[in-house]
Amino acid sequence: VAILKLEPLTKAAFAPFGDVIEMQGSDWFPINNGSTQRFHHLGKVQVFGDDGQAGISLARGDAFAFPIRIRMLERHPRGSQAWIPFDQTPFVAVVAPNGANDKPDETGLRAFYVQGIQGVNYHAGTWHHPLMSLDKQGDFIVVDRIGVAPNCDECDLEQTYIVDGTSVNPQGQLS
Amino acid sequence: VAILKLEPLTKAAFAPFGDVIEMQGSDWFPINNGSTQRFHHLGKVQVFGDDGQAGISLARGDAFAFPIRIRMLERHPRGSQAWIPFDQTPFVAVVAPNGANDKPDETGLRAFYVQGIQGVNYHAGTWHHPLMSLDKQGDFIVVDRIGVAPNCDECDLEQTYIVDGTSVNPQGQLS
Image 1 (tube, rainbow over the protein chains, first blue to last red):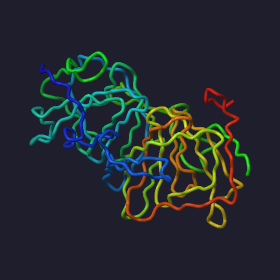
Image 2: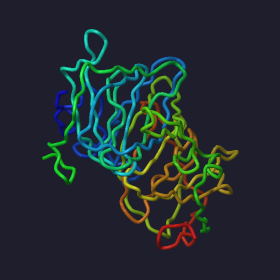
Image 3: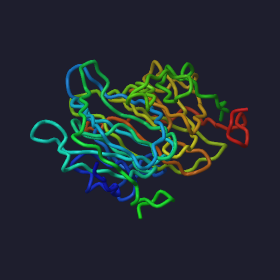
């Protein structure tokens, strides 16, 4: 097994994989006669194929605790998929670039600590691990493609990776 | 002025205006090898016109307090618009059917109390009041159409309506 270090989630670090949906560091403009700040278009919704459309779902994810073992990834080739906590639950986003063999490039595997006030929007085709709420059951808003064409590839990794969370302190902040 | 009674938000009551996004009373199925419950497709994202696409934004809304005066409504003819609290802030959704004169039918004006664990998705063209977070500033996830074509009509009402909130107790629950 190999240790996978947990990293802070930033727009720059995550850019190859998707969008970070957060207010911090994002531009806004006033709407509703000034009573509302709009942080505009933080996540781009991708829907490919004639049979699909974007939809809003909710999801309730089991609690995961460190050390977390990573053995597989999945991807959705026909659309983006956003995960935004509905109840401030932090989670772990594990992603990888695509390799020359059309499988995850494990040399580029990354693990991000997603704060409860952040969300992620995986771009279409981004290899990622299924939802891993941290320490407690978490509720999430999901925005993704609804359609009948197959839209989920799964791939077992060549080896097991462990996110041990030692870079996160007991308050859940990256240390 | 006229008093507008606050009603509980239910899928049935809100159906003519849009979707209620909530887990309570919604069906789910297991995903991610059983570790996640998916409450599938609670909100339908509508995007009309060739120049538009769905996008995810965030919004921070000023606090409103009862009595709330309602003087105008707006609508987005080219797409749906979802408002889902990011931080459990309740809000008030005021809506109206369209009238024969293509203005809000004020005889059908409704005010709904949206719990912090609920969201709404206004269907394209639904007359609604801009965001009104209750009692505190609120952060919201917005899913709507991003595009260049005009997509917001505003209309002043014939009279002022007051949502006095007397049907809500001090704990924010409908009494």
